[in-house]
Image (cartoon, rainbow, N blue to C red; front, side, top):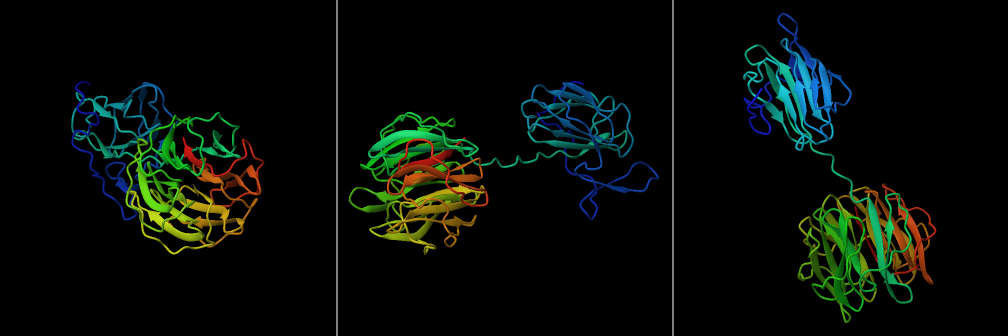
Length: 435
């Protein structure tokens, strides 16, 4: 065979030409004079074989094949003879056909009406090819050659706690594994500070920014959890709070500039670049916290403005902060928040005039629930991040003194009892996830 035509060739087009039955299955016939029968359109009636990894193989009618092209292209030779209704199916086992595709050798028979002088190649990741033999004129005809969308990846597997105060500003960090285990201190990078914020960007990295002083510097976190040196700040210097939006971007909003509470925001691009101030929306306040909900949105809630508040502000998938929503749950500041369950969030702990350990779940529609009885040591000034994609962890904080204990959050939003702390006890730190 010679003359490759395109990277994905179905010489006469691959529209679904098979007649569908009322139950959505493909109606086929096993030959002249044989009653029509229903065959599962996805190839469920085929005899599926073990994964094929070789560079060549010979297909047999009535079988399905998982083709793993991680290491090489696979040339598939079809049967030398076939009857009307014979079916074969091939599926991209490792989603790698765009790198190493499959080549169909029709072995002397026609393929979609064209003879064996044509090379037929398929090269789309996640593709599944279902062919049926018709007759000598058209030969093998694809009745489906669609690519299957990849399962959405879970959110980031790892987290990182950074900076804070332990009787004085510090800059050490502690990585959280995908099992929710906090590691020992990593020597600090960047200016020691506290009352800063942190969020994800780029889908697998993070950023710490702003802080008490006030300052507006930032420090990027790589996809392996390494904190970068100080980056010259953009936007109003202030204490910071941050959340994620758009699936791969972040936002810093609200805070305290040293003389007054503010409500401006600064967007973070998917390359980790902080934008200039955006005119504030919502009640100006400090120690507000944010978490993700839904698929590309976040919510800022609670905070402190000379007294505790419980209002919230949703952030759209394009980074637009909405006006105030009447608060639900106990008004408080100096709390923490993170996502869980991949599309929901949780606010926890804080200070009302006294320290508390209550939590409030956030639905995937951004609705804050009423108070849940607290679990774990009451404290304020802690931080929280997701881990293992769908779970969360609250860590550190202050009671009568700084602590390093943590509390895991399950993928159903249940907060666990205290875990003995690892790393320097401190408070007013920040946390984010990375991958």
